[in-house]
Image 1 (cartoon, rainbow, N blue to C red):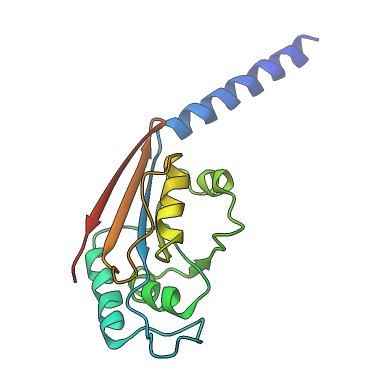
Image 2: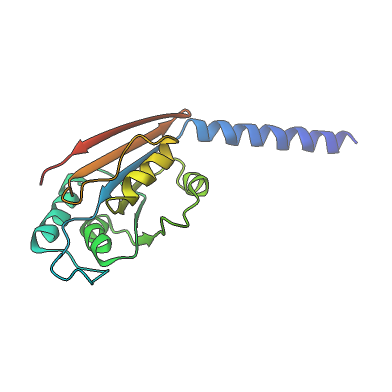
Amino acid sequence: MKKFLFIIIILNLSIQIKAQSHENEITTYYFIRHAEKIRTDTTNKNPNLTEKGIGRAQNWSSVFKHVTFDSIYATNYNRTIQTATPTAKDKNLVIQFYNPRTLFIEDFKLKTIGKTILIVGHSNTTPQFVNKILGTNKYADINNSNNSNLYIVTISNNRITDILLEINL
């Protein structure tokens, strides 16, 4: 009986220590919208980036030069993949795909605790994703001509901070 009680106490302590260790970890999310896409064919649901968009994707890589990402996520569309690719190559990371319609935010947050993550999305999904992380509807959809927003969300000690920067490249 004493051994059983001892094991229960040890397990309980290890669970508490694990929970406390997550509280001390810093999680940082960088959210961007894909770069400029080709708009000449309105029936094309999966367009590539324009030359300007390709340049912006390269510039995002420069912006993130000193950021050590653990993972890079993008929706499975040409424009988001092409936006994320220069940074992924520079960081030697494989782009992971996510579906904003089926993403369960609590699972994502648990999976990324203590990590630094880049997420590339769209004019509507990017601010919606940020809002889900924040737990409030702070940010509206991005204007269709705006490809320069950078949202940075940091979670530390159960406290969430966020900032929206406009990075004109």
